[in-house]
Length: 76
Image (cartoon, rainbow, N blue to C red; front, side, top):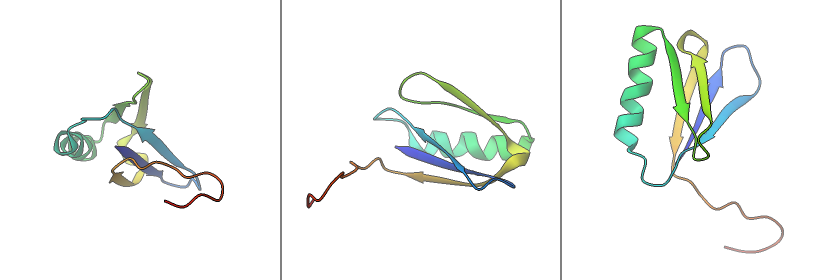
């Protein structure tokens, strides 16, 4: 699962890839709680790195299923 977080007044977005089997609903609740409580949204990626974003700086959050990225001229 991948999560993209848009940051206010930044052209870049934060991309975090979660381990397979991550509970999508629990992650969504975690995001909603951070936004309501005006705290820091902490996420741990599949390699164990922790990323924190102040909730007041979050413009949007996009949760998608991980997809294999095709490089080159191959067809899917």
